[in-house]
Length: 349
Image (cartoon, rainbow, N blue to C red; front, side, top):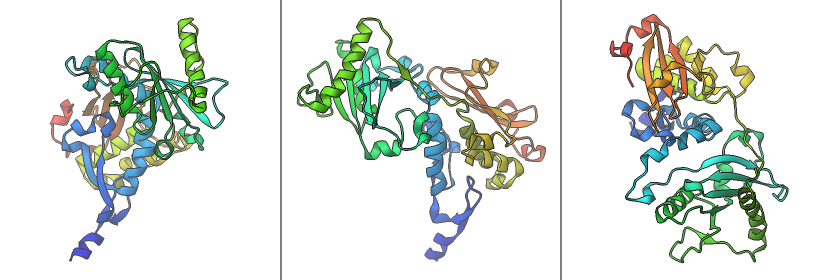
């Protein structure tokens, strides 16, 4: 009986394949990195196989969260939620400024430039990606970063104890696997998470020449060249995944086999932008809805998620912390929509 239970097949809503029940895992429909753990159980499902869960987490959720848009949104309004009593709880993620363009950077490395709390300057030296796919991911290929840690340096801009602790906590939280060096402060021995710089070390000396050039440019009020790769289709696949999962939560797992579910699934799984543009999806991505009046639903530092029947269509509307609206049509099938409680006419936030 135990073996039979393990071999029982389930329908995966993300790939529409029947797989052994033992292959399924817990999936955050709305990602943990954007606050998914704070949502009610509706926003999690165990109807996704582990392979699809992993694929989605890295290539769909991850592409949005670690892209320019997701990175910028994660830092928006965080100053409104600082703890005035405990600076270690006031460690907002640093702002990404781009990949530094400097002649002294090694050919096999990339240097990411970040701004930490209260004006701290951070440089992250890491191996160059081996695949072009990761060029739009802020901080590069997350898998490579786990196996090949880099070197991160911080120069603090304030000697105020609160901001000093806050900046160092942010630095430690964001660069978990890398060697962390403090440039302009001597870290006491008990600060085991940080290292003091050694300008007599050849590798560190080369890094610090690049770091010093930024400091000198700032003092001279000169700009430093940096680049960011921004995808114009930011959030498109992510929205289709959300629409598919919500449709299955509300209408049953067989929604993935419904024509509307199939369209969402195809678009969610299609990595090629040109091919995806041929799939008839109704919605608007991160850069498509600018100026929409739905932005009035924005909430400082939070993502607003609205599921509502709008003019005969079940839709998901998202408003980012910076009040950028996104939306996806889930289904316009009147028979399916007729199964939903009347509260969806008003909308659930």
